[in-house]
Length: 190
Image (cartoon, rainbow, N blue to C red):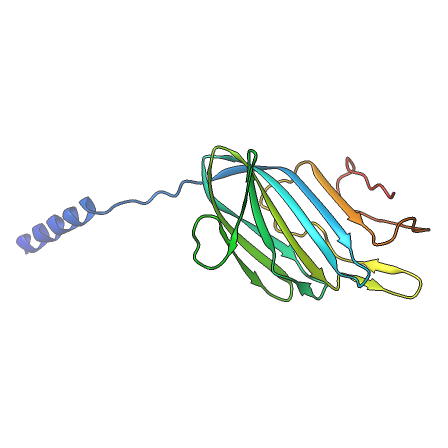
């Protein structure tokens, strides 16, 4: 019996000696800017351009972006770029998960974009361009956009947020807008 326990301890010691530990380097980042330009089309679609500037501390292999689609008819496949310094790189839509690629998963309620772009201790701006289908409901005398430009699920606080909505017609009489957020923000109708 003593030999069995001894062999078991030797085996356990060898097993533990050859185990490796994998550490996951947690990426740390801040979102420095979140700028959106929504160009409303006459048919109720929106051509959307989003620029999200991240400052990364340590290594990162990419970012996630989740677009809320509740209340609209869907979204077209995005185009994605990343800008670091003065260089803007177009990314390829595929499922290889290689550097400078992205992949899209769309459901009825949201479009999830996973961007693969390695950075380390730098600032990078991710640019997304796509069309949202049926985001505006047109009536004979008015039109309504009842869609969240900034959806839920942000894991970090957004800083320097600017949302611009451009209408297809200038000089709209009785234009109204409502926004919900912190009291330090403001809504300007022009």
